[in-house]
Amino acid sequence: MSQPAADRIVGLYEDRAADWIRDRGAALYSGSRGLDEAKWLDRFVADLPPGASILDVGCGSGWPIGAALLERGFRVFGRDSSSALIAHARETLPGGVWETADMRDPPPDGVFDGVLAWHSLFHLTPEDQGRVLPALARLVADGGQLMFTSGPAHGETIGEWRGEPLYHGSLDPTDYRAMLAAAGLAMEADGAETGVWLARRAFLSAK
Image (cartoon, rainbow, N blue to C red; front, top):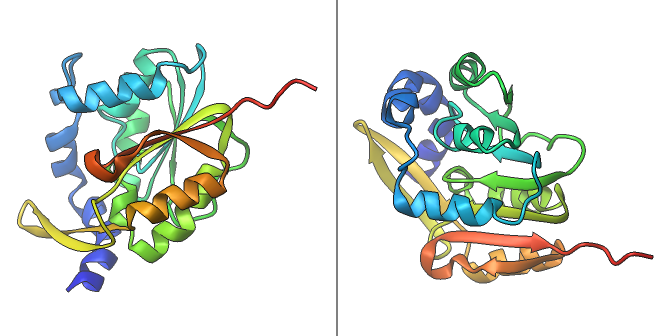
């Protein structure tokens, strides 16, 4: 069942965009977002400079994460496979740049101070994650950070959302560590227990 559920992810969020907006949209947004989510977002941006550029991969409708980043004065570039969710982001959060794109598509040009794949990368199969994560890591600028969420071990699980199967995949923590290290990123938070990975690229030494 895992492969059909994995193949369904893009269509699921497109077909049920209105439900997703209701479940995780502007109507639910406030400064008191879920404590765990707010804690990690605070940690992600703590050392970023004012006006830093942030790529939000799998941004959904832009709410609540993109909205919170824009509120703090960051430049937000959001990508999501659902054109309906991107349309909502463009309408409700015009301060951001929003693009319809699959996470498996070629990454955008340039580098970003922050790269975020919050509750999105884990909708890819382990094989696709093995290709996408290194590409995202290469987009992190000097001194920048990458944050994403994962499962606890290599494998696939099928959850449920509004009566439909919801696919999740994960690599093993050792694989995530190896990919981040190979990309030149130093671990700030190991997601083996929390499911949240945070890694930083050091500043290049002045010549």
